Length: 148
Image 1: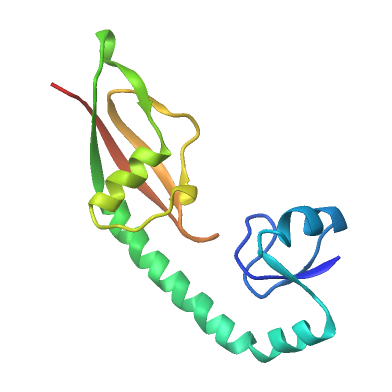
Image 2: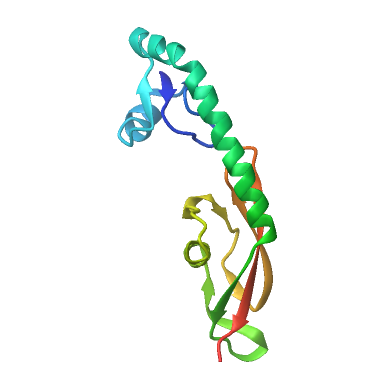
């Protein structure tokens, strides 16, 4: 099935791209979530008409993402947690905690953009990758300190 993307979807494409996906993937996942529209002649004509404005929008989004990436590369956040022996945390620091710390610092970053392979379970400095755009990533330093 040929569809037109309404949002950036990792490993599939960017807004305005016409891509071919399996019928089941489109019908069961993409269409119910309003991530795509069916690529009929009318929708293709509309997309061709709006290509220029979409490209300007993409460039603006990329520029703002690069600016935010520069700020985040220089920024570090501190998260306090209770810890036991050998500096092992009771619980862990996850993506939600990092997103909350960024929001408190004045940065609006969605949780789904933060890449954390495993939850942080020890004290210290941990690098965390944030994928703002397909080509733009930032590395944030997260300090996990012991709560007194």
